[in-house]
Amino acid sequence: MLRRGFLSASSGAKNVGVKNLAFSPKHYPDIHSSKFFGVVSNVDEYSNFVPFVKASSTLDEAAALNVRGSLVNGRASSKLAPILDRGDLKRFKKEFQAELAVGYGGSESGSSVFTDRYTSLVTCTKTTLSGHTGGVDDILEYSVHAQDLRDSAIFEGLGSIWTIRPTQGGQGCTVEFQVWYKVKIGSGVGGLLGGGIDAIMSSSIGTISKLQMDAFEKRCRRAAT
Image 1: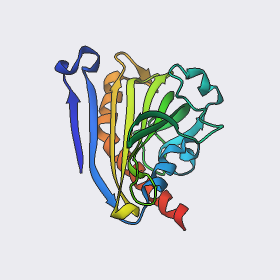
Image 2: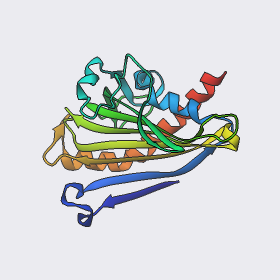
Image 3: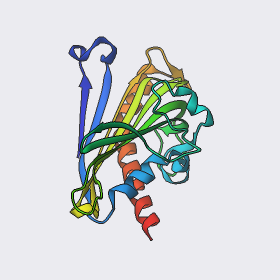
Image 4: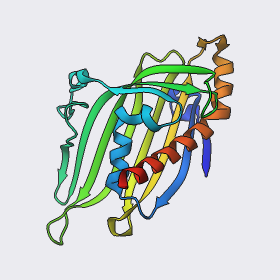
């Protein structure tokens, strides 16, 4: 189920006109949470299986963003660095930049009405609770948050967040997905102005996101075989 909404002026001036789409949590009883997290956080592979993603790559120079001492180079390491330790509760994070090219307004197998290329900051986190049986930490939650940084000719803001929680004693998971965007005023591409782009996005973003969610599920099942 898809929930659409707008962030109103009361949410802050910078959020006026931001369109928000949140999907109801989906349960996968036979996909481990770490497997789903691994597929979602591996941005380099997106162009090989995610509909409408035409190119995807992480950037070696991501380490230059290490302003908080918690950034791990996206290509060279898959390790999550500790950022929180409150007794039993621990959180780990890695950040990297990724370049993507995504088509909008077309069919899954056909050409897109327009394509946007941009750079995102991707933040991956894992939250754990110290295990009291066998010394193994329990996974509480994974998340993958992508926020458009620069270069987009179409969007003033674009972001998404995956939240993945284990179920079934750790053998399954529940996944939530949310995406938001704001089209630039006066933007234009392929003969379309901002209003036309906004109309195409409003009519297609839900379908695109649903197809992409299904693609991640299929990739997880393929990786498990």
